[in-house]
Amino acid sequence: MVDRLANSEANSKRIAVVESCFGTAGQPLAIPGRVLIGEGVLTKLCRKKPKARQFFLFNDILVYGNIVIQKKKYNKQHIIPLESVTIDTVPDEGDLRNGWLIKTPTKSFAVYAATATEKSEWMNHIDKCVVDLLQKSGKAPTGEHAAVWVPDSEATVCMRCQKVKFTTVSRRHHCRKCGFVVCGPCSDKKYLLPSQSSKPVRVCEHCYVQLTSGGLAPRSDSISRPGLKFNSNNLSDDDEDDSSD
Ligand SMILES: [Zn+2]
Ligand SMILES: [Zn+2]
View (cartoon, rainbow, N blue to C red):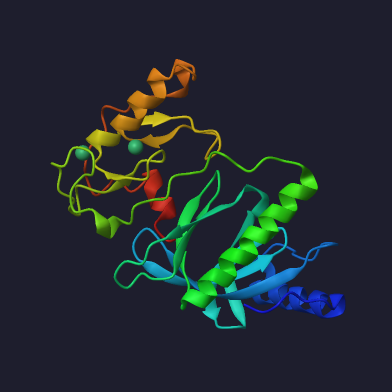
């Protein structure tokens, strides 16, 4: 992390550098009032395994991308509006240390810094940006957030039925409501979670019952897919979209 840039000319230059590192694949980042607070490499816990990602903290957005060439070229840019961000510390466990959760209504995930000092710097800066933004807009903090996905490697059997063992043909799925790794039969329902998608998304049986018993959503919001089969041709499954991330 670097300290907040007081000099606005230096700030504009640095934002231009970030833009150029993402090239044409990235969004324009320079807007009036935007300040680059800091940047650094964090380990992002992805579906398959932890991966290094370059993160940029601005006063209103958090940007991250894949590292093609360190400090020169990044791709797969993601932009998260800080207004909707909530953070939570994650206790150290094994090799995964100095982590915290970045939770938003559309997507939530864990990141890990190299040291405890870096972690607290990141968390303090993010927190301060979010507080400042909410104060300025007068909005309330975001209450609802997407589930943090349990990594595939954490589950050898379905976390709901505890029976189905995952193999190359019996594939893992993620419930969009609780984030558990579940088998096909335990997640053959879809439910509309508007903050995550305009289309109904995969939920596990347990969450489906909870969601539907609440009686808040119309029945048409969910569709059942009892015919789902386990086979290797089932690659059109929506879970695949997230596997590279
Ligand atoms: Zn199951
Ligand atoms: Zn669930």
